[in-house]
Image (cartoon, rainbow, N blue to C red; front, side, top):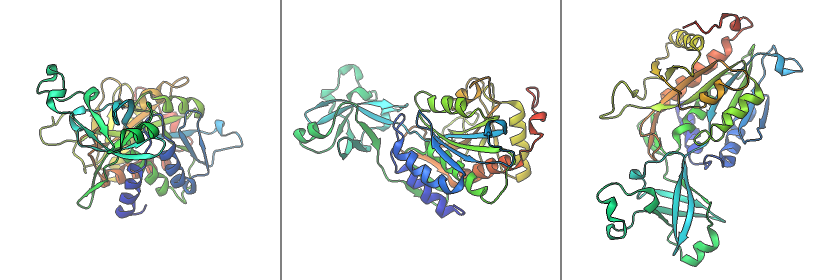
Length: 360
């Protein structure tokens, strides 16, 4: 992935592969294929997260004695689940947060005994309770229509089957991509870019690249992986709210102008300072993102695993979050991957001596 076309192709592959929260096997297999040649060891956690290790020269036979950096990007995506079947039409509920206003008319794939194409439909107004009025129709009244006869639907689909978005990716100019599941496949692409940047470079610390499971619902992947791997430092890579017409400038960030560096109780001040200084040195543009409570990312779990892990949050601006038409800049993904790689490469034996909570 040395150039924009290759990055774009890989990212399209990522968002074209299913892997809803709690059901990540298809996307994990794709990421494993990409990471295998870039790392020394690869495995799957008991909860389904992918662990890839690139060894540093301080590693011994017992890698627990070597300092390690964990870079986590969640691989799960939002979507839907079948809750009922009536006359061949499917009732649905959400996996992860969804805004029902954008759902009618969306193309989906129903993952039953065989995959069925479908579309989310809104019943006619006279079939919707009067209390809804002119307001957006709640998810409980929306349906998935596969166009199949009721008998066939009954034979192929069961309550609990998954429904994923299936609109193809849309390329907008040279560096912008729109599509579903870019939260957080964009960060998986950035972490993959980081590993590619480190090919042939000797690290001092061990590096764990982790594609976490279940971030959208439980944070369970990050929590269990951090507990299992016990890294010295951790970084959560995720997306943040990209600016769009009418969005408040103090709460959103322009796409194409670099990642954000989180600042708040989930973030260790010394790590924020280290990443900011490194980004300035590399001439990578960044913005400070104030996260005064929890960050809404895997950092919530990473930071408090075991006895506590100094943690950082780096985010890629993304427009229209948690919709099927999320939008990112490939430049931001590339910059994020480079920043992560250079941070991993500059970690030395004395780095932890410089860490204190007061730094920053």
